[in-house]
Length: 364
Image (tube, rainbow, N blue to C red; front, side):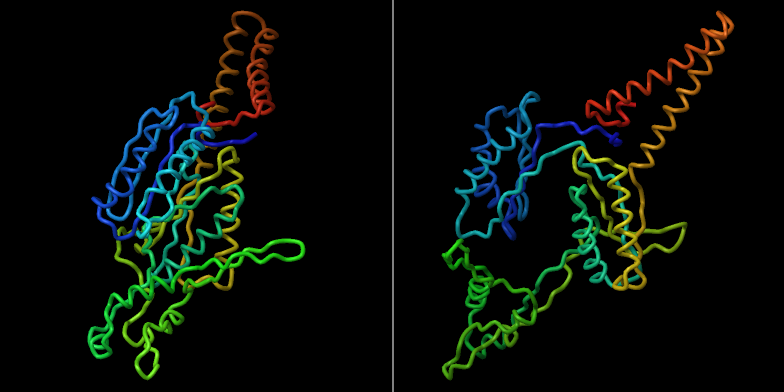
């Protein structure tokens, strides 16, 4: 029987997120949030929604009527979001809207901390790798990282080189935007099947980007990006910081990994799978020295405590009923009544298992 801390309730709620890097809140409100609001208003079964426009992204929380099926609600919502997306500025670098279903099961079932006296770049690389590895577990829905500094590509132009060669910064920007994109090449029709062709043009290393030709001089000499700019892959500005200490020891930098299970999955199975994978990764030869992965908490402990409480209460009830009835009646009636309590509980649990119900703290 599937055991979990909270029951998987289907809540007709969703969260829409649209990223527009570098855009001001006013731009996001006018060009992204407003078209989405206009379309969402007409969704069938809509109860209420709330939106917010921030620097570089827009967020809208949508709630449907309680009797609206979740699958149907999300399908109608996606259709309206797709219609609003067609109204976004085509020349802007607006990412595709993300729609996430909100659920009680989105609470993490196990939390780990990656910590140690290592460079922040190593800490970030290992955390991203762990995120990908944990999300390969079939029962895991997603992994949320906390306290991590994202990596991004930094290009700092050299003004004196641009003046010397007569190159405008806008030329560099346009060349980067034109080069760093994939291009569709149509289709290739074979004798048995048809293949879609495309050119993979996005840069996957700093060295390749440095070799990008920007312009050609009169003598046909190419001027590459590395000649007129400093190109490096660095950590972004720090937004939050986590520190971790074990057994009153020294505090070290850390990144939290909160693992969320898929709806309907056994909490204990997810925890065991995550712990096995963590042990395999830490014991591998590629694990950085001085780095540790420590389990902070998991829902298994809470579920075990709930089971211990109900078991203790059942034992106490059996003993009390037996003693009371033995004084009022005979020991036979007291024994029958005492046995009836655990038998009834076991029969109830068996019926729940057959009907597909899960055993949660709420049920207990």
